Image 1: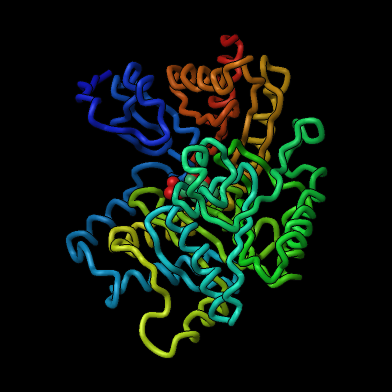
Image 2 (image 1 turned 30 degrees about the horizontal axis):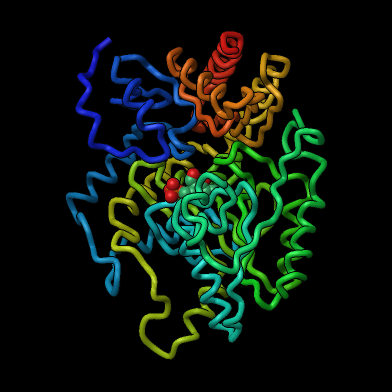
Length: 440
Ligand code: PLP
């Protein structure tokens, strides 16, 4: 095994990382190809998480590498305001083709966090354009993750992400209850039967605040980062019904769930529920270049366009919106998804992965197993007084055995690239099973 010398680790402040612990036991990746990373000590590591739920087509895809290098040689950058470049329009069309039919206007961002904050602003701008400027209230959900912008953490429901900033979050935000319930739903395969009624809490929130003050409800159709929470049957349908009834926009944050993660173009397609706005990132560019987007219903776009007589209609955007490298990566990525039929492949593999993960029932510490599409969550009983420690140890042990997993709290999340084979699925869950025996 070729070893890579470690650099000075002191200068970098790492995101969402236990920095001190990491720097004592560094885990650096130096290469990636297909399903595998190579770590700095030369060890091959099977990527059971598609990086951070984003490398859906597998690592180092030549078509994407080619497209990016061609693009940077031809047009490295074009200002994104008041001027365009051809690839941005082609990429917008390509993204719109993956979205539900009525959602075909695309705004580019660089990340999921930016996509969420953009979507929230769009919702408010839309209501103002229609003469309902009082609709400024936003409804998120407990345990929701919508990135780390002030908009995203305000509608988000993960306490650790909000605690430091509690006095500074957006005003006029309320939260639906989360849908996690071990007593009712533990070890459910796919969508749980119990829990649709939790969406009715929206009626109470609406009654409390008056519907005419509410701009939008934002939820992840499947909540990933909080630890894989699967929507109960009928739950999202009910949210759609209630939002429609009161003229409230429904935003699906599909940063994780779009682009094949659930075996479909979007969660919206899988579940047959069309929101008004969809936020995107991660799999949109196979993570080869940072990219995100907001896809909106045409009417929302048109209302905002029509509201100002001339000039800039929406005062929002990023220096790197539709960056040429991002749009090149997006187009090449979407081509691969289509050519290799990766969404269909993920759909076909889902039952196999469901079977494999549910084999862990009965293993030490496992108190729940959840799955949807090519996503699985394994929840462990927390160690008394040390929440998260058990999952962290399992993560470390699996990494040492050559399998990259992910943990949030005491849930291990698995979301492999859609090119994963059945043998690799077996290896992932066999490794987890073996290591569960080794932790206390
Ligand atoms: N929204 C959801 C549902 C996510 O899962 C994430 C990231 O995991 C984000 C938003 C934020 O995306 P980013 O980290 O690209 O800002």
